[in-house]
Amino acid sequence: MTKVGTGMTKGNAGMTKVGTGMTKGNVGMTKGGAEMAWLQRARNPLFFESVFIYDGRMKRLFALVTMLSIIPGLAVAAAFDYPMRAEAVADNVYAIITPTRELPNAGNGGWNSNSAFVVTDAGVLLFDSGSSAGIGEAIKNTIATVTRQPVRWIVNSHAHGDHWLGNAAFADSVEGIFATAEVIDAIERDGAGWVGRFDRMTGGVTGDSVILAPDRSVDRETELSLGGETVVFMLSGGSHSPGDLMLWLPRVKVLVSGDVVYSDRMPSTNAGDLRQWIGMLDRLQQLQPRVVIPGHGAVTDISGLDRLHSLLSQLWAAVEEGVDEGLSDFEMLPRVSESLAPFRSHYPGLDEKLRRDLSHVFLQVEAAAFE
Ligand SMILES: [Zn+2]
Image (cartoon, rainbow, N blue to C red; front, side):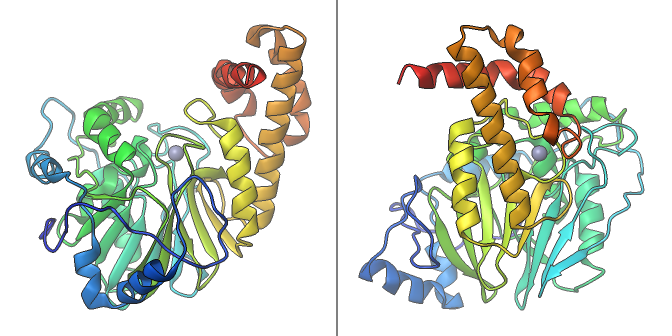
C-alpha cells in the first residue's frame, strides 16, 4: 500500500456527479453548474489526486498500518489451484467468474464470489478481491494474463468476507481501496472474524489472510475518472447489505453489481432491505446495461435484472399474503416456497436460503403493513 494519504483532503465529502441519465435516489446526487465544473476538473488526472475525500477518517490510516500484521493462531494457507480465467465482457473490461454456487468450502478453496476488472492506461481497477490473500494472488495472476498494468485501485462492494479478503495481495501496487463508510467500519470491526470463519469452512485452505481495509470512503453516488475511464460508484441503499457499492461503466454500459445481483444462485436476503432492493433493480434496469457482472453467478444482462426483480417481488408478495392472513413465518414457509416454484431451477439453493432468511423478510413485510 503506497502513499495512502497523499493528496487527500479533509472535510466536505462532496464527490458528486452529473448526467448519465440516472434518476434521483437516496444517494445524494446533485445536478447543477458547480457540480459540472467539478466534473470537468475531475476528468483531469492531475486533479484526481487531490479530490479524494478522507472525511476525517485519519485513524484509518493508522489502522491500515497496524493491521498489516499476521493474525496469530490460524493455519497457514494450503496451496490451491483456482481454475480462474479472465472473461472479456467489453472493451478493456473483464469478469472472473467462479463456477461454484456454494458457500466457501474445501472443495472450492473458498473461491465462491466473482471479481471484475477494468484495464486503463494508468493501471487496473479491480472490483472485489475474493475470500483470501491466496485468492487475491490468483486474481492477480489472472489479470496478468491480459495486461502488464498493476492493480492501482480496488472497489470492495460490501463487507462480507468473500468480497475483500484478497485485498492484501495487491498491497504492493494499490493506491486506493474504495468502499462506503459502513463497509469500512464493518471490515474493521468484523474482519478478523471472517478470516477465521473461512479458514474453518475451507479446512485451512484460505489460511491467515492479512487484512487490508478500504481507505477511501464513498458516501454518495460519485463519478470519477480513473486512468481516463469514467466510472460511477452507485450506492444500493442497503438493498442486499448495509453499504453495498456498485460500479457503472457508462462507456461500455457494463454494470458491476456486487451482490445486489445474483444471476443464477438464490440471493441472501438476511442482511438487506427487500423493498429497497426491488426498487433499486428498477433503477438498474433503467440504465439499460449491456452486461451485468453479478456478485454470484454467471455474467448476465438486463434479463438477469428482470428475473431477479420478479423473484424478489414474488417473495415479497407471498410473504405479504401470509402476513395478511395472520400466519407466522414458520407457518407460511411451505406456501411461500410453492409460490417461488417457477424460479427454483434458475436459483439453486432457493429453499435452503428461504428457510434461513424468511424470518428476516417476514419482519420487513410486517413492519411495512403498519406504515
Ligand atoms: Zn457475496
